[in-house]
Image 1 (cartoon, rainbow, N blue to C red):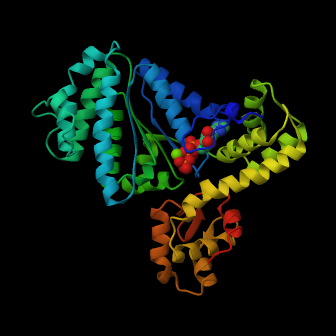
Image 2 (cartoon, rainbow, N blue to C red):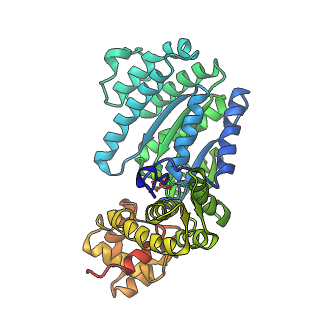
Length: 390
Ligand SMILES: Nc1ncnc2c1ncn2[C@@H]1O[C@H](COP(=O)(O)OP(=O)(O)OP(=O)(O)O)[C@@H](O)[C@H]1O
Ligand SMILES: [Mg+2]
């Protein structure tokens, strides 16, 4: 079929043609909006899951929903490494300013206007001076240079301004596991305080499966502050809709065995559903997609995933780290014991500490339990078994 009309969207954070299987999360966020309007207490939401399950898409969906309700919306993606730390803070400063500007034409603007000085001061405190020329600064507000204090004052000012309008202040943080400990700690502390003071401030975060553990390690009371939601693979019906509905909408139809084959190949993973759906659309010669088309689409879709989704991660690993990943792949996509991996590589666990730590820092693996590691990318072991280089 005409590839210009292809509705599927495999790609990081790309809005899918049909967002399937996430109604419970969408309802939870709607509840947060409604309760904030009633000035009732609520918790922030944290989404955690493997690569490509649709966390970013859901986070974007929530942020758009918050904006429709005239919330003060700040959206950032954290970056790992020391350079990333500075960049993340600058992004935060810029995103807060952008959040204010987006409310310009809204009824909340008259209250937001009063706190622009705090936003300017906070930016300076974060070491970002780009915005102060237009915002000005409020001396004595969010300008102490102590991140905890400044963030607290800023959140209080913005959240109270939003409370006047029965809206909230939402901070949407993607790849949240990559926030540095200082900023993460300050954010959790201010979320804790906001709950106690009834400021309508909510952190809505998304990250890898180790995110809840990272939060608890940073502040032990984190467990009580958030509504933790594990974002996983879609069930059969949602997977079938994710591929079938966008096709039907454009007048195309999948034979039931063809749809079954595509759904089985994707194993419920949204990224793979998009990749196979896209390939099926492209290979089908008519608006009726049959099993033969589906089989070819799975072959092509897998090649495309290998050449994009998987290879991008694989290339980030050094040869020593790849050996570590290969040893893990023997457990398929299940968790591997670090001791077993060491035994497979005929090394001591301590000789592998660096490779393991680097792979975690690169977001390729995570530690689901003490002494265990697992791929963050679904299907990684299958990909590794398709690689023949050393
Ligand atoms: N509920 C869904 N139904 C159908 N397709 C979806 C759904 N959620 C996400 N997708 C598709 O899956 C792909 C991955 O989505 P997204 O980038 O949000 O995943 P992610 O969990 O943020 O991944 P990563 O950890 O790599 O950042 C995109 O192509 C998106 O269109
Ligand atoms: Mg993402």
